[in-house]
Image (cartoon, rainbow, N blue to C red; front, side, top):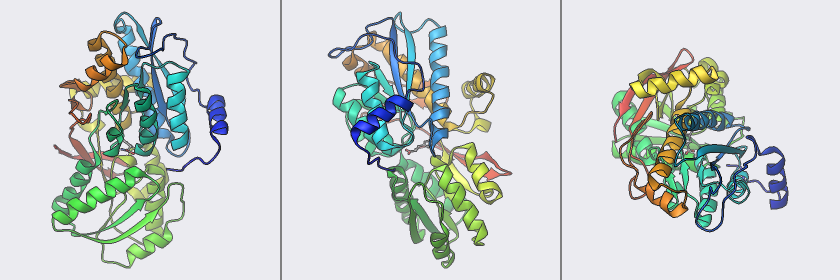
Length: 389
Ligand code: PHE
């Protein structure tokens, strides 16, 4: 991710000016070990509401708010209503750390939800861990995220699994033996997923023919794709985020590189199809959720989300909904907002029926989940396969 090099003062000032998306937290509470002493329990959400990954934050935030509205409509938890306060990270690590600091110190959050991007969850997680405030990332898949400490949880699968899923799919379903990798070296997620794919693909007997790289925000990928064109690669693994992946697909088409692109959950946004256009058809990516292959519980979520917001949710929404629901459930089981009790209740989450599947938090504070593989056809992502851990 881009590192914000401005001074802390400017970053803090700007996050104060532009960062408050929701209304300001009005709850009281705080003090050592216990928060949420008022009539509301504040859940702080830090998310990329603007910037090149705005879809990540916006879709997640909509779903978090929907989950919380449902909990509140059913009476709230432990006699209190939940309140979501969202601060914008703009897709920037320094802003993410500032947002979590503010959500804890100023908004008096009982717990933190976020981020989507692993690099940002690493930055925000360090703050939550230091303050001993539980944090649940809905969708950060890099292994390092929960290694930050015992207050950091996630409700999604991890990249070593996701990399294996795509490696197996490439080798066994697409019958491809030689793959090129094009990764974002400014992004922890992209680096980790690239390594995971490579390890699994080579174990299966496949070969990584060439590795090329770019940085988030880049718009010219012609040198990298020309280098790949000059090899005998049969597919290109592009473990990046949707904006750059869309640009990569277009450049590949322009240069006559007629290879399928393969990727991971970072592709999950309608803008991928807008930016990539026709060029993205025939590509595949792994994800957490497929709206067209949903369980009854997930179908209800998709229908409710559509009714409320007029658009179909992506996997991000599904995970945001589950993260908020798991957190509400843990507060209920803890019976209080004491942060240690809440941490223990989160760690104790077992067989929670989410819209993305059953969620059990393991001793490393991760969840083991199935992945889906989606095929892009006619400008839409369609369910192709489910892969269990
Ligand atoms: N898994 C990605 C990361 O860790 C974030 C992401 C999740 C993006 C789901 C899109 C959909 O950075």
